[in-house]
Image (cartoon, rainbow, N blue to C red; front, side):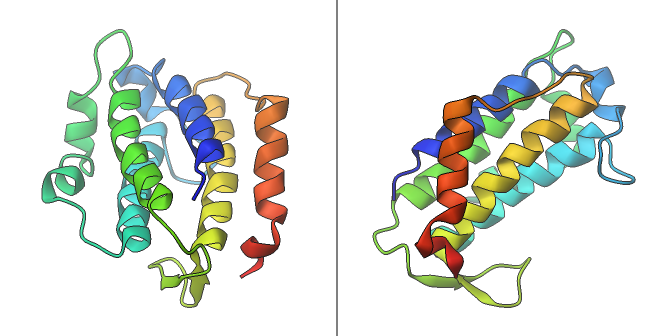
Length: 167
């Protein structure tokens, strides 16, 4: 599959995360009861889990374990920012590679978050649209505004509206 849009959105999200400091992890997000640290842990776990679903295989233990604890997340941060983006890019790359290896986007698979089977193209569209929303949520937590580039927004909308992405 072509993962150009996913790579672009992941790049924007990683760029936002690169500005976060250890103190920022406690900032609230638009998700009730979640701070930026909680959101980051969710994003990392989601990338790893979905990569496993899409690839149909197990994700190496080092990639699963090292990304999923708050203490590991805090340890990855440098005092002046950076670190979250490195960790995010690593898990995002797992997911991008999994989608890129898909030869049949109509192949169906089951995710933990959905009781139904969904085709890979639908999972891709859902993840791209959620990643754009995640950019907004991270920016909000950091006290910044976020607007996707017009080209990125157009491509994301095109993916979401794709006939293949209608399950």
